[in-house]
Length: 103
Image (cartoon, rainbow, N blue to C red; front, side, top):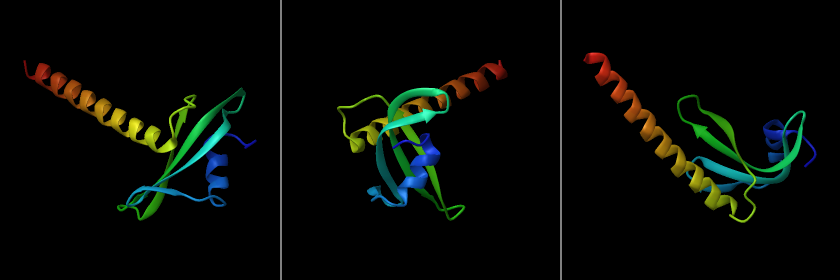
């Protein structure tokens, strides 16, 4: 693809098949994408489409990597697990700060 990053991936996604990860979550893989204007290096982009029940609309986000060996499904799961861990540490830090405020 010759376009730029997420906007181009979303535009192209209408012509491609989505892979279902779980109910309401789909991915597509784009290889060799330029991620930002002015940054010529190409990366692999995983476009994630998730249905938001609150807004009843589709939400898109991207996972960008230079990893070439792991398949898109494994990368999606890796990033999801990583996000869970990061959220856990954010919660712990938040609780720690709140407990220090009470001292």
